[in-house]
Length: 443
Ligand code: PXG
Ligand code: PLP
Image 1: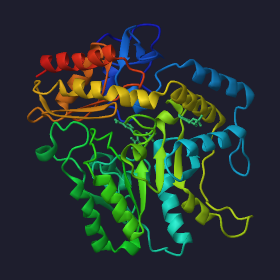
Image 2 (image 1 turned 120 degrees about the vertical axis):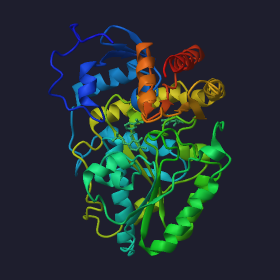
Image 3 (image 1 turned 135 degrees about the horizontal axis):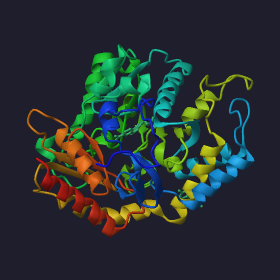
Image 4 (image 1 turned 90 degrees about the vertical axis):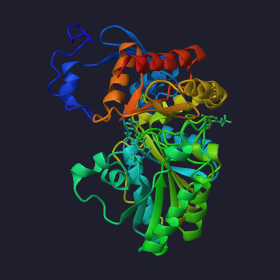
């Protein structure tokens, strides 16, 4: 790896405390990205790097798209900021309407935040407030799932199911419980698309209801497909079963679609892809193609309406962010939605997914590979951990790919691939070809 000695690198890396990063290791051999266009990043040492991760699951329309760049530029010159409390600006309303039309079923009201983490906290708070204002104030329990990732706010790590993200931070929210995750090597390894086995795991919610009583449970939050913890695909029938049980017990179902939204699975949203309607849906990332931070929570009509009672002069929800529906984010998101529509990118992802699936499963039998998973334009490649050194092999694979000009994401020993939806088949070949070559070359 080349050392940072050219002009495009800041000359002191010390002050920045980098997120989710081994700071000291990184700073010994930094990897900086200095430009991006289409499917490629430019690295600080001047190389073109194929983006196999859509940045971090967010650049679904590809990098540097002119209509988005121009929309942001125009907006910055026209209206830089407008306060969102007791005030508004036109694009906030326009974007909410656009999203409501795009979202499945009656998810037709939208609350804006600035990230997935804020969207999750917002959704959990709305769920609690909903029950309370309907006279069911005892419904305070939140149910997440093992291996779930819901961002890094206290709400999100409490319902989240990643030990490492929780253990440094004390007791977290009280009154939280977790469903088991849905991944099972014995019965699911090398499934193409949704695994056939595992729907019964949703029935674990019955056990939590028996334990806590339904009258204390406010909401269940799950990622329809778990992304961060290594691409865990929902078994056939699992989400349907979870929906049925939530309905039966009066529990709100929240889909965290921060990764699965905006075409990643070959449909606008996973809710649409699986035909399962949540009561609340969180989104972020690709809503603005990653160009300006934005997050949002969509809620069903009935849920919203239940807040619109009491005197007109009353604030119905004591929640919001300085940057809720920031004008630059709204402009970026509107231009992004235009691109998704005009280039039919969600259908494009669906159309490419059989080719993608074959490419993923072409790695079967390859050195170190113990499972392959795919859905839409997502792949999970699980490696056998090196004895006594879990995560090392995955990290070396990530570095090896980067050195060969391909950016992938790694979590432990699982490689996750999720390219921009504009990827071409020869680029898919290069992605998997590079992974194969790198796996052959590491211990
Ligand atoms: N929910 C889900 C399902 C996510 O995937 C968040 C919430 C939080 O979003 P923000 O914008 O606050 O980061 C996410 C974010 C990875 C990785 O390695 C994935 C995410 C974030 C960081 C790393 O796969 N997803
Ligand atoms: N696809 C996307 C991404 C959209 O944002 C919209 C509308 O907002 C549509 C499709 C539907 O387009 P139209 O409302 O023009 O039928």
